[in-house]
Length: 126
Image (cartoon, rainbow, N blue to C red):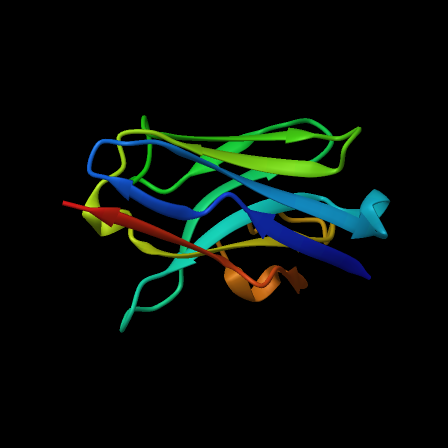
């Protein structure tokens, strides 16, 4: 099992920045992909970004490309989501999640992620 704890959320103004962290513990050697998802009130949970743990390949939703950067520190078993030029539509609860290797990279499919953190609230005011 993998335990995930997010941190770094908060209230920021339009155009501001935040950096989210996701600390993993437990069976971290089995992590293949670490992903970030978000859910705004009344909306479906959506993919934000993902990174392959060993190689560091990165994937982004079109809505955040050029503004968000995902990274990871495999020594600290922590993933990060640097969010710049935040917009009110980025307001949501942000979750990190881990995916084990299954032979295919389903980086944007939330059903393929096995473990989830508790979420951290990001609020962008206009």
